[in-house]
Image (cartoon, rainbow, N blue to C red; front, side, top):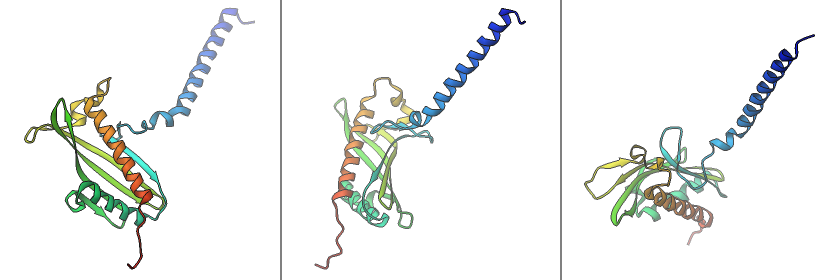
Length: 187
């Protein structure tokens, strides 16, 4: 017969191992939830860039949605030709370089950004990143990631303003995709 002390030691070790396995299983099951970005918030993407991304489920072919997206860019930015940096008709991808005008402590500020729009049948995805903060014209441009603004416990005002702008832009884009009907009428 084994001494009580050895039995107790083995039971304690077994319980400790079972507890570690249980915790590991719980963490593994929750990993997808931990990996998802918070809705309508900037998040740090795998490439190290602060990113805003939204997928839109809408009726229409990839070609239709691509055409609607290009029209939306023209309406929002004034001229799609001036802001379109890259267009791939075959893969239905376009990249826009734009500016978010705003203010910070009473001064005018520009937030430069890149917006990538991709379309597929029934879906469109908007990805906005490469944010660069610039104060007055001629002042240095600072990448959001380099400034450390996103690390501030109480979200920085520029980050918050950028998120508000992006949520409104995404809503505008979604409405545009849903409402606009491209007509084939001969009028």
